[in-house]
Image (cartoon, rainbow, N blue to C red; front, side, top):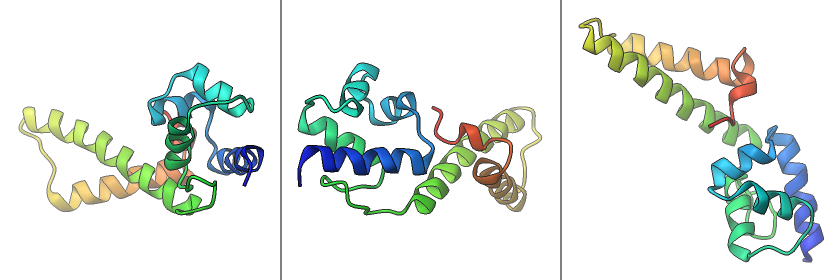
Length: 126
């Protein structure tokens, strides 16, 4: 498998996931210039390829290891838990913490907003 074939698979996956180059840089811990060079087809370190393919659920050769739907659901749940934990921490400080069932429902609702609702455009933002 050559570099251009892998790059083509990664570009298709980027579009399917709705990622921007900035999202990829932040999620992978790589610099914007490095990510831009990779997507321009320039030579990059193998570790760069590995970082980018890993966050996209691909193996080193660009083959799917985790489907896009699962990746989106995982990301939405992570973000929902983070946001709800911020609300819960603030509420607890004010002695107005939520019950366990209410927290689970809030996480579920927030996750759905990241997947299909108004927060969808922020799914991959840091």
